[in-house]
Amino acid sequence: VQLQASGGGLAQAGGSLRLSCAASGRTFSRYAMGWFRQAPGKEREFVAAISWSGGSTYYADSVKGRFTISRDNAKNMVYLQMNNLKPEDTAVYSCAAGTLDGALGLLIKGAVGYWGQGTLVTVSS
Image 1 (cartoon, one colour):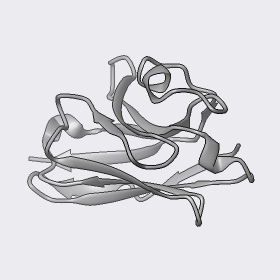
Image 2: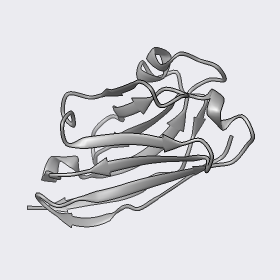
Image 3: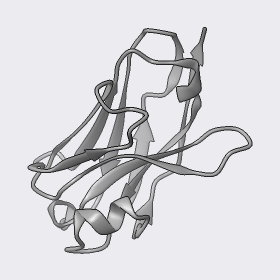
Image 4: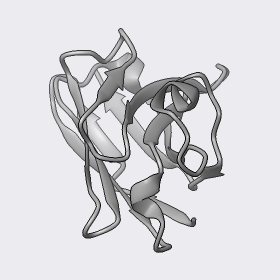
């Protein structure tokens, strides 16, 4: 699975951005998918994840209620809608695929099978 993220940019606090992640491969629908981020000088952290069917989602407490993860298996796409952005959301965001047929919980704990390249999100105050 190859992953290509896009949609990052500059936003003002309170604004919105939508990240997209395009995946290659015919087995996309068998992977839990997620987003992680890494702020300058900090370790990478989990942001959001979605099960292979899209029926289950999970969010970090810091983004719960503001971010929404979704997927379109017909298009091999994963999205992260980010609303009410805060300066502390500034980071490089990377999409990730879990392991083939792996559980969502494993991805949340960092069991990543494939990483996409990051896209920079900058939120100004």
